[in-house]
Length: 356
Ligand SMILES: [Zn+2]
Ligand SMILES: [Zn+2]
View (cartoon, rainbow, N blue to C red):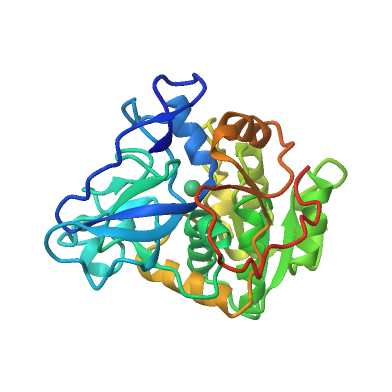
């Protein structure tokens, strides 16, 4: 099968022929239809983070496709022919205190797709039956792919923010993750503020439900948001610590900062006095659970979310990564369409000139 393989950190990925993987016990073999490109894939391919994957490996944790074969043992209700998503949380133990309290994303025995185990930049990927998530009929695989990480991650972050219809919520960074965060925040009924350095992304955020847009190049986001009364919650998906600090500074008293993005530069300043007097909360939110992804797909099926994405061939993986890094990718999310099928593309948006 064809796969995009990392042989060496920071070297271009090699699109090559590799053996089709074998599903082990309680695993399934999935024939990939669509696979999204996430910033994490680039961090993986570059070996950027303290815990590194081991080359050679196949990145990709937004794979969507058809179950083609079941491994031995419990298939957890899956059957050949079902469409599933293979998310970042490839495996969790199911027995620890985190797994047993609806927090399997914190499991210390977890395996991560496209990182500790081979991922979805390939024609086939193996997933654990308990952790792949059914994609409902009516959801295009090329939409389901970005929802599998960008969608579920921001959906969870909005949940963690405690946002309600009475809240004002600021989303810092409205690209691949943030354009979904804006929509999940809007769905709660909250007043949504979008902050980004890119005017085209801000325009898209407004179409997707933001009532205020702020470009820090021309306006101080802290002052602008405080002038509105401050944000009850801020979600930081940006790639610079400065944006995280601004998000914290934009909070109203009692507000919550949810950290989602993972800047390569790992430190942010946290003013203790303001945090104490303001009763502020700072929390991290990492992807989402199996059930969170079920809910994300259900919202999309109901037509409540839109995925800004463009499709490229897996052979062009290195060009796609370069375009994501220099901001020239045509839309918020790039999807590799790996095995086109007859599914009607009902929801592909006109590119809407998202990120440019
Ligand atoms: Zn991701
Ligand atoms: Zn566990």
